[in-house]
Length: 352
Image (cartoon, rainbow, N blue to C red; front, side, top):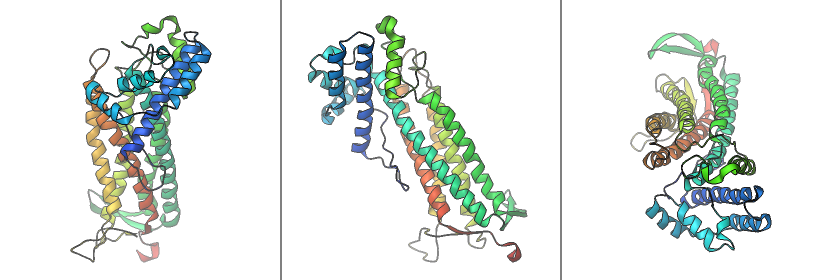
């Protein structure tokens, strides 16, 4: 539908990109904004409170015609005009719906709600991964590995020395995402040109009411054409998968035949060479790290919003950010499962 759309499974193993589930989730966020908007207009005495609450409840319960929405998105470049037409067709007072707001206000606020859920999941998985890496340190930390610089044998180190290079950045990423909540989990309320002019003196009060109902931040100015918070978020996604890619690359090298510094359960088999056990999860971490690193450059391109609103830069963001979020969540799930499948790292001191 030409919009930011994703679904993330809270299960331990996977991230799903199911079209119907992701559409339902995104529509729920859009309708939540529209209902909050109608209530905010009533709270500032622009609408009758009783009638507005009836309309807000109807918005929340609206059953969207997805086919109509898809056709509308193909024509308008985004789904909101078609959605508003549907909402107004079934309303007792159509003027109580969407008055004074814009499609971008709806979509960007829905994005903020989506990113709140993404960050919740990322933080949970970062914490779980930290626990798994600490367990590996506790279990195998005193074992001996050959330290390698430039992929050549250097001096003996302990397993704890290497695992710490995987684990310590995880703590920094958790802090980064905490800070980024303030930059991404916030309402977008700007109106036609980003200045809230149509709301007059009530602009700040309406924005505050919507933000409170949706449990989002309320910036003093619309961020229509200032996307640096989202680009910073994408950069942190790439930093996270980059850390996991380093871990995956190390494990691939440690698992090489003849080196055998790590033993993994549940590796992938080969159709032609049955003696092989491929470190597929470790390889996946490397792949996803490289994928996200490539997308970051595109997100920086999406910063170039001409004047008060861009169609092209906005659409580029829709193409890139969902995939980066999905890649990051999948990478974290794979890293957790990879750690659980490690049955030995290094050698005990008396075996070295």
